Image 1 (cartoon, rainbow, N blue to C red):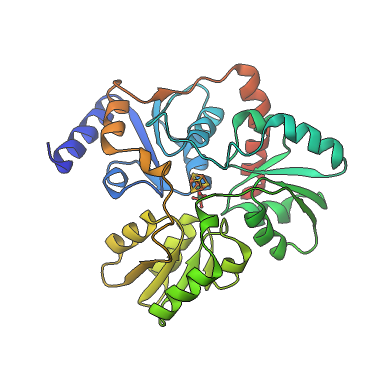
Image 2: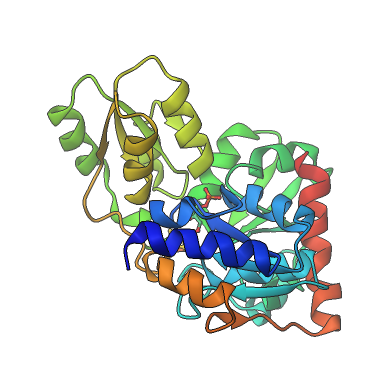
Length: 305
Ligand code: 13P
Ligand code: SF4
């Protein structure tokens, strides 16, 4: 079977079975083409609550499928590839958060969305890379404990000098592989290129950027810019998507190491299997978990605009 034939089959089956396919921007282009919505973590959360279909297939990592379930508990939610997790989400547990709350008693605990559902039961508000600054500005609290990504936290802190931030050490192992020297090398090879970067990168890398933002933000910046060449400081798939969407521009990965193997797990066949009921993993969360973990997600949507 060709890719096109499989895509046609998925389109036919998802319509027949009333299935919505959500895909994170890091998924491959063949999956983008069959998805009802592609976007960053914030966009996916908003879409999850809106989708009219009864079944949602999430092409992304586990916390994303769990977020969909939290927002739409009445829907059947499937994670297309059950092995796709996020190593950052496993860096900190709910028990650790409860300990931290004792150490930081007068702090609002702000968690990156890349965390477990269990942890979300214990935090005050969740943020994503595209919504974090807006949420911080709208949050009445002055003292913030930002977990677990201290790189995203540092970028947010610089834009919110009115708040007092505390961090714990954590972050995305994929984005943290990039160092300032890697960027300097890429800039030397492509001196006319603009550098667009994700805030999960370390601060020395972020400091060298012409644009900093979420996956959707990076794509929008490159598409709308008059520049013709771009060095991309996020997962490599974004380079391919931009090449497909803007064939008259040139996109270079800042490093060939910037690959998230978890995001690469999901294939078009996994999506097909999930749509027709032959695969994927259905997400089950207890009513109590949904009630407790949803509060911080609802707050994200309320404060995120
Ligand atoms: P965004 O798409 O929200 O920028 O998230 C990037 C990411 O690393 C998701 O795991
Ligand atoms: Fe997790 Fe980083 Fe992969 Fe995103 S890119 S899923 S934060 S490991």
